[in-house]
Image 1 (cartoon, helix red, strand yellow):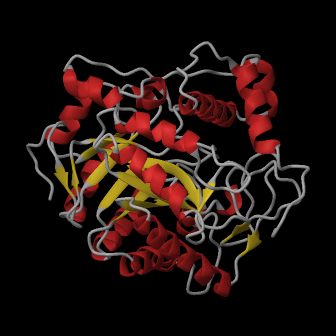
Image 2 (cartoon, one colour):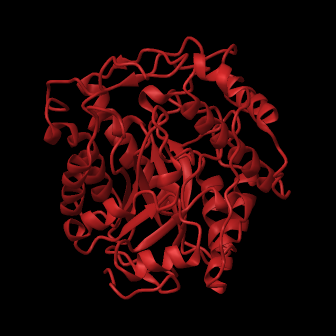
Length: 418
């Protein structure tokens, strides 16, 4: 239950009975570390073993796909069945070795599938393309395919529980498939999966419903939800509040608030200066849904940097859990530092492309910078996974080369099952 006078160091009890040791979570960032078999490996275990000792109350993994034919990027872990049980169990244990609970973030990219996988046709609620250079027009899903994807989320959650994870997070933010169903811009269906806000949210609610039914009562089922997608005519805060109310009725254990997409990357650190000055990007919205959420804890990720800002958000009751992402890349012990020092302030590295007047004529600089910073942080995650320290001197050219190499390695290769 939520506590209006809680502090960062206080534990948080989720409705399923799981106790988080404090109110700071390491939020999800896509690691892109799996090999060609899409199984977890020792690099992921090494990374989460370090985070597990970093003082966090909760670790949330990056994108774990539920369909190996539909990937956001080549290095995604995929869970379709229990073939990788032992590797998954080692991943969960790595976090638990430091005493930290861990959730697996389950996701389907939809039309945000890897754009450099040439010849692959992504799927989506409707045949509406992503407003980004090089994005393929998706194929609209059939009703049978939609049901199959819902079952994939539930099946993956069962595998995660058997492997020893503490919960799952359904990714319904940042422009991925669940978000596409929620968006009136991406979902133009007029059947039972679209046409009005109630039917557009049905896909998410069915995933939660079947997942909750498939796992044990003590296993956490959480959701990452956009406050809005920050696009004219898109998913609004009012619609998001209605989704929160519906999720509460389905018995979710935690709702994490974020926002934006790769078309409008409010979540990537490219937010306006006025937004960054408020420290927490989505805190005002989170506070507005607390009454709707009732006893379901609310987490907010995006922009938190100081002990003062984090503790104030929790103590005021505006949120119950604070998520930090990019600062945990350059400082894996960020939570311990914040909890130990009330004057502590975290740093998040941010880089931008040069030649801005020229690039600005042919591309959206906000999109480019957002992708650049995501890739820079992925590079640092890979260093941590090898037992190395972050490289703060890494610039845009090396980062871009690594991004193309990482995402493009399947572009001209043989494709199976597509």
